[in-house]
Image (cartoon, rainbow, N blue to C red; front, side, top):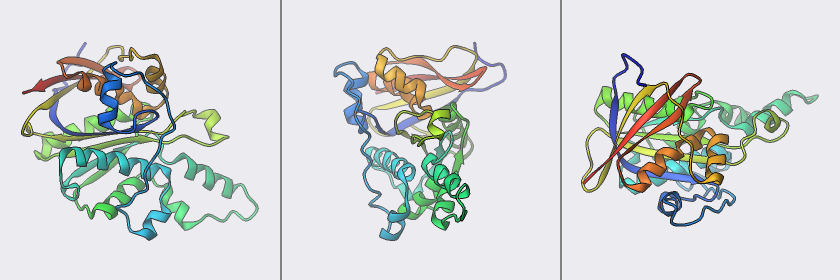
Length: 271
């Protein structure tokens, strides 16, 4: 059931990036999501952030590298100029490894915190490194909504497109936590999704997205191993949408958002 008084928001998908366990990029993910190839879980291999200067590259953690890699996949897929794109970065909790290091330092006798660790701990760290790597000066937003962070990021990107008439790049990403934080927040594998969205249909084949708030049950995945990943990692809540896009036909998916409010996305291929 649609939520009364909430107008639908829409945009077109121009580029896609995926980086996660057994899904190294969008072209490799399409046949898996279509069921044409079996899903085989594998460690997430995150490339070094070659776009960053060497000094900044050494300071980045796994979370920043993951976000940048997925975003650059989507930009390359679209053939876009990353420096001109408004961005939305969405993560449920930021860099868990950095959080653990800071907590460990505060619990030690010296209580000395590295300045590098501190500036990597802020929630918009990936956004900052993106602006350095791509010399990007367009507006950038960093947000979190716990397990609904992907849907929140998609809503934000679509809202910005409706308000400005300009494209927006959504990057949703998660990395796992070390113990003892992992026991309280078990994220089994790093995962990132990036969508480059535009207000008008790009040349050639395109996919239109129309989103609205609903009170319905979120969609699960027909592939058990991928469903386990979807349920466990907030950024992987994007997988039902990616599956629908990969299938190349019209349909509707319901994504996790808030406890009593979900995000329904209608997918319409355009010739």
